[in-house]
Image (cartoon, one colour):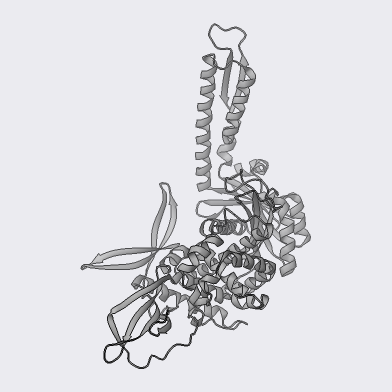
Length: 600
């Protein structure tokens, strides 16, 4: 669900309000439906901030206070005395982005990352503390993903972070940002353990069900100094580039628990032992349930999980479905898991495992459409081959078989649909020297009509009903969605760093930014604002800070000093509704600066 801003005019006035919208699929494509219309909270309603506080009450952590989002305190000149100003000299200067960085800075402090890194990276001889530079890197990745050079040249100078963090813009440059990456990386394990505890306190997370998935991200450049940069199966459709693999472990709610980086040519199944061992070393052994896709499945991995007394729910290769043909044709013992999805339990051969057959109406329609499309393309290609042979342009038998092989490879989903023969003509009264003939494979058609939309799950949770096992497996989409957010919203790809340590640090910053993203999504969910933060971040980014400069004058009209008030723009009614539901209040003024005549 996501937020949509609506505009309408009534009685000559423009009105803005928010609608909570859900996206759903229909036969004609994706459609939207309005779940609720949102305004400011009534006095009897509870804000999302209060919901977070209720979760923390009674635990080791104290209830969060709105002061997390207040600007730092500065010693300001007293403004109790009335001051005469010349209105014609009033001007606005130094306009900066405020709302989005203010929100990200508050999330950083809400997760107590400032206190943790202050303890892990104590101040030394450096001019700017490294924990503040780490905050700048993460907030930049959250608000406007870009390179360190862009942060120095453009982004940081255009934000109000110097007022919030106290770090002048001239102190934020690429050398210091790169050095901050180097200082941050050694604390990866400590950060993961801290975030596990803090997120668990904020959102009352459970860690019995762990979802593991893997993706790739590619490089620009030769990456000669990075031994992990290798060519392999690219999820980004960039097989021409070197890449690394990222394995991410998330909870059933999609909150990240940890990640590992692997060489770009590693097989997915070979990463499971390393990830499971790392999770056990950090958080101990427990009766956890691991959910993995079929690319992770191997007998060695399943034996490992059994030895550690862990449970598992995994997908299986498509070829395994052939062994359940009789169970698929049997119409008994099917149970509805949700609308359009049916599941069936089949006991394993040794009684220690259970197999779950699942069939989905939507998936069936999708696979049938794909098969039909490939069938049409394959038949068109066969007719072109037949025409080339009939005209005499294609005479070589070896060349004809190679062209047929390329055609079948290109349309591999329908490669078994026909039985195809190419023969050389002994005597011909025409120009043709070769002949091609094909007939429909009835067995293939029968199997696809039965198997389309079906798949098999495998688990050692033999006492759990099949519908529950299927629902737990489907939660693996939360891990896939995490990769989509990191790639699309936080721009983890492409990676421009060339050194192995810098690549690792870049991924760590993206991981921290994703934690901020998920924290905001969980907060929005408590505030009944959906779970898609992009609209909220973009809306708050419209709130600016600026200097209102006033020229003070004496009683006789002579200029005395300039008064510079660093203020925050007033949010409009729609923005106030969002802030009301989040339960936070925007600061009005950041600081006051008085300038004597002639002072720069």
